[in-house]
Image (tube, rainbow, N blue to C red; front, side, top):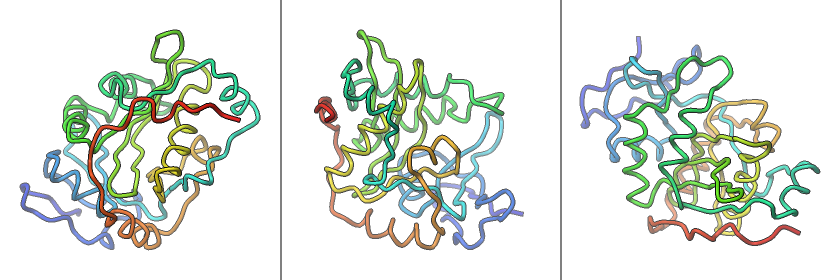
Length: 236
C-alpha cells in the first residue's frame, strides 16, 4: 500500500519507501499546484499517471540521466545539424510543444499521460519562467521539440516529439549544448528508453542522482524566459 497525499500540506514520504515494482512508485494523490510540483522536482520526484487515475508520484532507482557534455551526436544527425535546414528556438511556442507531445502516439500506450490538467500545470510553470520548450522549425512549421523544467542548474526533461525525421534529436542536441554553455550539470531523463540511451543518457543509482541534484538545485538562479535565439548558433 502506497501513502496517500491528502492535501497541499501533506509532505512527500521518504524516497526509500518507493516500490521496487513498479520501480519508483512513491505515493498518490495531492495536486498539481506549482508549489507541489517544484517541491517534487527539487526532491527527485515527478508525476506520471494516466487519465482517470489519481496523480501518481515516482522516484525510480536507478535514474536515467544525461550529462550535457555527454550528448551523443550520430554522423547523420551531425550532417543534419550542419546543414542548417531547421531553425531551433527556445520558449517561442510552449503551448504548441506540450500539445504536440500529448498528441504524439507512443508505443505501448493507448492514452497520453500529458492530460489537460498536466498541460495547465506546466503552462503555469512556463509563465513563472520555470518550464521551457526547445522547438525545431522547418519552413515556418513546428516539426519537433521538447519541454522540461529548469531549477538552479538542473534540467528536468519531460517529453519530446517529432513530425519529421530527427526533429526531436535536433532540439535535444541544441538543448544539451545550451545547457552546457549555461553551466547546467545534469538532465533528468526519468526512465530508461533505447532512444534516450542512443543520445548518451545512462542510468545512475538514485542516491547518486539525489546527491548531485541537491547540489545543482541549490545554485542561486533567477527564473525567466530563455532567449528565443539562445540555441541559434551554427554547428561546426
